[in-house]
Image (cartoon, rainbow, N blue to C red; front, side, top):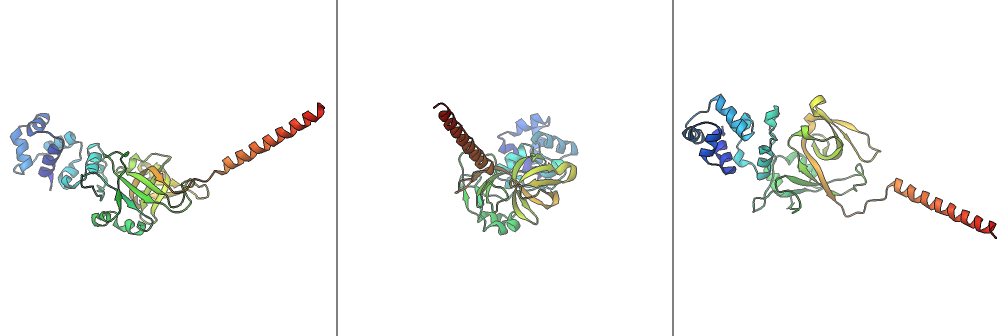
Length: 269
């Protein structure tokens, strides 16, 4: 159990003294010290008070070693994205940090996809992935880049590198927005999502390319979700058929105007 070490860790992480926390929780400093040092067992009321104070579920405070979390994971946890509060299993993301303790952006290339499907939760596997940083992205959030394949999300071309922000709470998936999703059977997919997690325990996924039909993905088959941020490609997007048709129509109209002008000119002679 990690309750005593967690409350001490959280207090120091927020830069607060024992007097500060004890005053906020309406308890004696000696009582708080006893909890932190593991010489006193908290009552149910005390557990509830700490849970409300730190906005972290009791299960998490007691069962999870929060000192092992990265800054990005702690940031999400302290902003209320604690899935224990919703009765789900806690998903702890395997991640890496730079020598300055800043979250890396790991790169999952096309060749690495098969390994990622089984090693996504293994810190040793994640550690060997190439890493980089993008200074214009928030340091308080966790990002990862995946190379996509196929034409289902055209005009985003095959081979593009798509960066996503980690989504801890799947109920926050927004309808009509693109996501990179690690699935049980199909590996990594990049799709537009319709969130039916709370009502039907599934997502409905569709492609930008209308040749691909939408399909349902049960929540039990979802391993990770990343919200689309941007993509990088060495190819120029192809012109859409609508734009080509518009250009052709414009040329036809201009040609008709030219012929009308020629006829008017002949009539005036």
